[in-house]
Length: 296
Image 1 (spheres, rainbow, N blue to C red):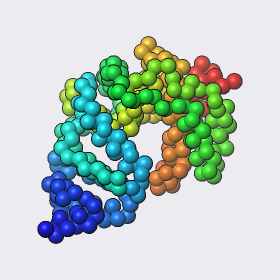
Image 2: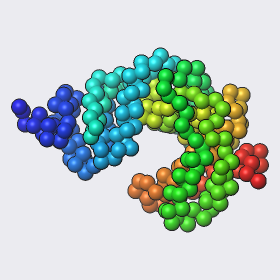
Image 3: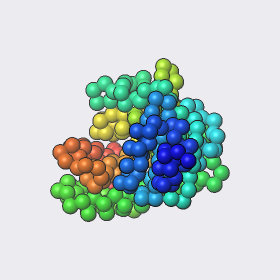
Image 4: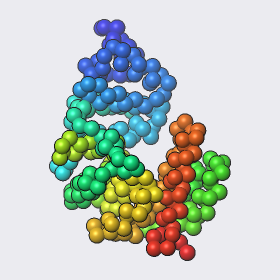
């Protein structure tokens, strides 16, 4: 057995992984795995994802992505092609063909994407939601439960911004529409980094959070992340011809609370995190103004 294969076996990685990574890339992957980090490595031809039981949440979401691709659904957007997968109880490896297209995030102008790009993606989301939900998949996304989870994390952060955010979350406690009225197949993380475009063709990538959610969830997430979220809030009304406006606003409320939580409790912190948390907190406050989410 080669030294390369010996190293792979020692870390519980499949020997076949050497087909997709150079020796240096493989060694660096091992180094990061020993530190317990989830790995996503982009090469000239492939996207290699490796997750371990050091972070069960990320291992489970990668397995969820694998199971989603295995459904073989016919969708109105392109999907990455799986070229290799190997999962055990302790770790998962998923190798995808690299898509030759650029993320929409690189096409921002000012604070948001151009109108034509936003309109095209929203049309694709609407068409995607015509897909029958996979057998055995049910909506477990409950807005009220999410708010309770995010409130707890924000409160434990001890950040001064929490004093402004917590009363707003408390006012919404138990008053949202739970799982909504129109469940649909959902990508779950439709930000412009996960949407690739080449000409008139689009691919949705990173389906780790694929699930059944309220139909309003994906268009709301895309609209908030495609713009400055405060601008995104003002754009929700325009989506009301296709999706329930009350549910769009509720999903925006939950997503804004999640982003405040993420910026205050995850990542490197610092001045950037404080600024981004404040922006999302402002979006949250905009959502409870008259004519949007009525918590009075």
